[in-house]
Length: 351
Image (cartoon, rainbow, N blue to C red; front, side, top):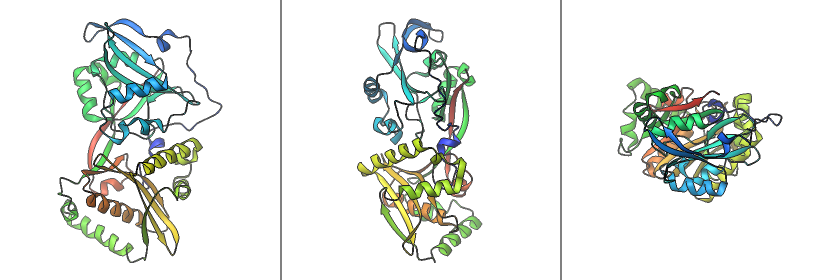
């Protein structure tokens, strides 16, 4: 989620950390800690085992084995950024057949403060697939002893799961849209992309860009030097609705950016006027996808956010990215960019 929308963690219903809250599950519950041997899956009439894995090193091995490694969010070191053993606990469910042959994995994490089961690494990631045959999903959902909230599941994967097991429609529902521009579709040519705008929209869009570029801004590609300024921009704009009033989230997002910077994947565009920072936007280029992550700017500079996104679009085209990914959620501006959309579903179980 980037500068021109409410930050993603809040929009997806995450509760801010409350030190006084503790929803630790009953450690003696056999449903929580121990495998359920030879449980018959009513969809297949075959016996399966559901094993709960909590050791973080074993979880890493399983993640690396079962992850499709398809997007940035499928990588272990990215998912691990938001893990804190003081406030959360891995709860990976390994599905095995009756002969203990592994069939797939669902990587949950238990949030101690809220009592929720989420996707491991799901505080910011998205576009999730199921790492097992979803015919087992209903059993896994009922195996979880508490409330489940997982967002930004790939819509095609969710609809296929419901098609195979209609009972899943109780838990899997449309939740949001994923916004992006397929740059290959437009042959990496800005002119072709702009032709998707109506004549009036294109005229107004280009006028706004020309007008704001009359101001002598300076642009630089940097790292994470201005992270504290970014946090201030976010809090100033969204106030209590900003995720960055949460110190834990501030630390974790900085860890994410630091990791991406070390891997030479972070693309931070800063904008200054007369030597004073007026805005910035973090992006990352990975596996051919140009992700626009988050940013902020001085709201007194009209259309500065539009100019920053335009600069990132130009850079994505220069890098021959397959697509520029604006992630999920919108307050209106992503539609104004004529973004293409894909559906995201959520997985929810109310205990």
